[in-house]
Length: 258
Length: 258
DNA sequence: TCGATTGACGTTAAATTAACATAGATATAT
DNA sequence: ATATATCTATGTTAATTTAACGTCAATCGA
Image (cartoon, rainbow over all chains, first blue to last red; front, side, top):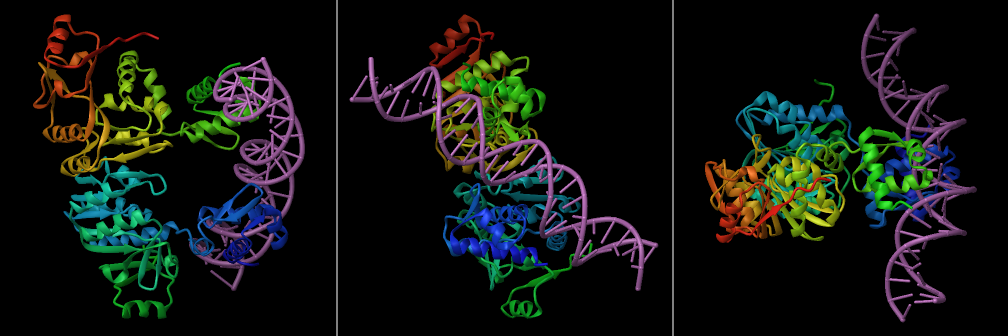
């Protein structure tokens, strides 16, 4: 059986090559059921690679190459939890902790309860919701323009708010890693994260291994700017050594350890 | 023929009342075609009122209309509705509206739906929760230190965020009124509200009549600073005349039963 | 007043989805 | 090592949803 990921790659390339394809053509071309084609293109559409049209699919209107590279894999929960647990090594009771709008950073919040008292700063709405009823955690929300896509507050109001504050440690994530550069989809989010970097004494980046060797639209930071880059198992030895030679403080976290 | 808007209202109330309804039930209940029901609920779903489920619709969890409905069945409904509705006289489509952390200002939110598109700015957590699911309302949250007492963000971060923005109209409330002065309990809240005053072209104060002739710890503003002070019936004629002589633009809103 | 435009609605065929069932792969326990 | 459980991809089918088109009435502008 052909691996599903490969099938999705093939479908993506096929659609990107032709620009627009009818779903029946995909069914015939790949010799699988219509339902399976739907499931594949649904996922590709959710990843922003393709767009469904009712009977057909097209590439996203923002250019062929970009759409091809916007391919993102979904991260699983166990990996995120392992990363979050490892991130606690950089937090101490009494610290000021800054969290970005990533689901990875959000996973850290429940674990922070063991380190109270703390001050926590975030621009993430779900993270804020977790913090509004906790004793002994001083919570500062970063305001700004609400974006439903990220469920977070961003924009210049947010950047300026960050600039007024100083944190002991920043825990954040990125959309993609290529070489020694971390990437993010949205330039306004990049600005907020860069402001967070500038406002934090230590910076911890959490990225699962599937995000390596991919790019997003906007460069965010060089990996050497982080005091630690935590990732999950899955990188080749050569790549790990290459990153370490480049000065990246990389830590590979075992998912099974719990 | 029943007007389409009224039909949508009826559908919304029907679904809100029952929590979840099958589409076939709606078809039977309203005696129109399935396609028409779809078109109605599609629009309601786009407005963030309902959620489609494949064969059924539910109310949006924590949605705006749900609260609007709950709002209607409260005891003080008529009074509060009258105040909030009167406040709408100062808002136009396209305006930037600033709302403080008062429950009175929160009550205005459901009514703002008729004036979309709008930009709304607030530091109130419950108000923010109402605004995160609404299309065509550009929502800016004022961040700051979270205070459980007020369920809002305040402090210097909030004040500075306000100072970066400009609104067409501020709708706010106060804890108490004595003479021609509005009072608030907490000095940090006073600072935020004063910043809001400075950032808004027009200022509307909503205070029900029971707040008159009382004081709180900190003076907030003189009533003459507001472009309108809206209150409910209950002040003596002498008091109304005295306030007007002092230059207060007072409007006593009649609570019309409906 | 007339024609054009708009919005609401119905009908129908086609497309999509949810739900269930199956098989292979992978992990886990005994 | 074997059996059991879990997960993922897939197919099948029925129900649901959508797009497209046509009709009708209300509104608008010349």
